[in-house]
Length: 142
Image (cartoon, rainbow, N blue to C red; front, side, top):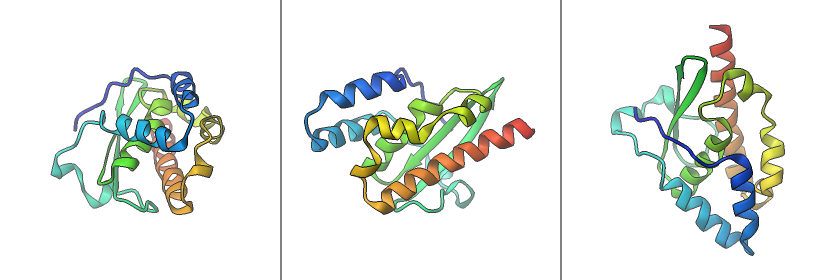
């Protein structure tokens, strides 16, 4: 598995997306963000890593490193890779406690994101978030 390095902060992302006048331009930017995700090899795409509830196929794994949790992801859809990147901006490299304390719904509201996604895409995005939160909870329990 290849770990991603993310240099974008949540505030950076909010500022950048607010710069665009149209959601079409914002979608293009989100898709471009997804291109920065490292494509995992085929062995990563297992049933146990598959996130249920997503319209597209999404594979996810969490890797603890000291007190931080790193999320490894892959998807078969460009827009979903971008949405994964958005989620990782908030969670990647954080402690399990920080992940569980983060207000992801509030972050999505600040990005004005959910209302611009189809209901199934929004549900899939929330399924990804729940999977990461579950990993964080499991890491705390040990």
